[in-house]
Length: 567
Image 1 (tube, rainbow, N blue to C red):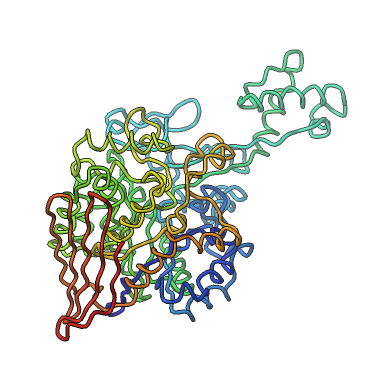
Image 2: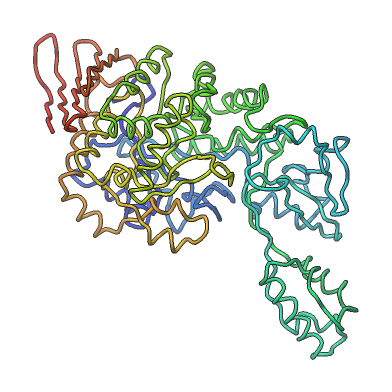
């Protein structure tokens, strides 16, 4: 139901190819009679745009990926009364972006020379130049830095003049050397085929072993080393996500243009991915810098407000740190990363005590939240530190792993948990009663409920997808694309039909508004949540003992019952 200009109705969450293969097929799903008035919003993940890695989160540009979506699809969603939540990645862009490719082509003469962060310029005067050509910051400046991967976050880039320049690269990177053959080296060997073929064989073998070209053992062909290495380096290619320099006016022009593009697509909510990494200062943690992070958000807000966009800063931090409170106090929406773990804990312990505590805090602090069960990422655990005891968090980990899930540690650190990867249905033991109760509770939580498409269809862990993805492919366990046949079969399942009925209830009645009074109470295994706005009242009564619940919506002034459901 909409409250003023902001709608608290349920939001579907999917990739553009999750339901049938294209966004057009997603729309066909939403146009089914059974789906009428079920969703008011659609969070489409960023493979909607031109991207290369991380299934969308390495953005080349924000034009539509025409293999998956067309402008007419977005127009159709608007005509259905469905607004959008879209992603804007503030910290980085793909090396294949127009801006970075211009740097590779023009080097020092590029208009975008400082669009990304030149590592050496950033650290000038704060470290020691290495033989490899990058500055190693002074040890006291490194000790507090927050790293997403081992080693310094650098990608060495070769300019047209042959110089190597280090750029800041927080996330993924890969340097790719092309396979060569004798013809590539014929000019180097002055037209001699045999040594050219031998050089190509040696270099290809070294690269396949993960070595740099300069590490190739050339034996009696050592005389050609300089020319061979120069050829390989001049022709190397890159993959990765390069950090933007927010001190550049061109970056702010890019921010402005991107927000205008997203608003034009129909975005009412824009999720700010990786925003906390963008502000950087020598000696700072360079993750959630204070005050830099909040200054950045303030400037982006000034760009977004005239476009009718509400910003949703995305950040994982422990409850104990209180970052969620700071975000709320500064007037931003809060991504409720606590709910998925709290619900799992409540269902396993058969107690809603901590859930009620969290509901009351949301209401007391007047936080506007977006909540979820599953999503494209994992089930958050780091966020629960300080909200649940360590032994209960570990119990959740053990339970989900025993049901086929995977633990993702914090940025490669051993035994420092971050999230578990599993479908929410499998995390619940593939129990329909638990899944339906979890959905009912989510729909009575304060804020805007976001629904992962696989949760709706009670999707199971996809271990085959994890195996196909190889190393680092654990997230694919919960990203299975559904075919039209899968959707048709799923729509016949009682667990799917019952969720849809509850979602339509949540979307239909005005009582579910930001102005409603919400009261939550717990008594043993029983938990009740009550929404009241005007004379309309919605009540959820649950019993964790047998995972049963009932829902009712009525007009208290006339004692008219509009909706009733019991599991």
